[in-house]
Image (cartoon, rainbow, N blue to C red; front, side, top):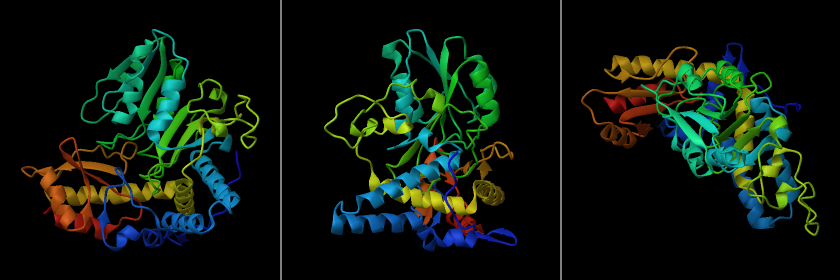
Length: 388
């Protein structure tokens, strides 16, 4: 594995100093922000990194392009460090959908093969698989109830022709979190590969693909990673590199990427072969800065903090008459909490909250909050006041 990049811990004798994290989030100056599962605010480090790039690009063009590339590759290394992978297993992609598409369209399907997934996945983790029907691939959407995605029905839907099981780490509407060790072991025991839509978990919950051998993973940076839209991460296990047919092939896909006069389809022997052409330089420089911020606090500490904040939010919501629908056990809870206020219209409540500078979402007829580690008790009290 690659050596970790240096970072300074932000801790006190009592643990991480979350006020430091909060100070790095400009959004907290005005808003009580509970919508990280939709579009997160940019972190201060990302904001500053993008601003510096904008100024440099406007004033100097590509004169200092090598410096941009160093920051771009730093983002790759930080992404690899975040998931416990080697940098050769990380492609930087435009979004989660792009990562899913690399697997769905690049896998060598044969007529009669099938793919298994829960029926309550976010559309981005359904349409790329459904689009395979014209290639003779059967898509088995396993019914779910109450936002829960139990392992047993998923595995019961698998057979000898199941090639890929595609599951979200955290369900976007309910907050249900998968046990990745059990999921990975069960999928592999059935001879299939696991694709993980990690966008609602990555940045909050620890993951180590060296210990938990997930096959493919994708996540955009604009949610829990606190980066901009259009800058995401795709992980492919090294041994599968030649399994997927590269898509979007361009000058950046080949080993001799800077020799534009040499036309020879000799793919890079890393996940960079999937990156194709020019990249969202500003976006990945910003994402890399946010990844560095998260690394300063550590994934275990961030996980514990997010669960602590959302547990407090659940208690205060219940005290205020709300019905909390999300499953909140220690092994299934996440940063996402869905709830209802009986007799109240969720869309009207969301507008009411926005007027009071409190941001949350409506999903499937319910209200949804999604708190990060910099949120605190004052944010939660503002939420309760805005709702009631």
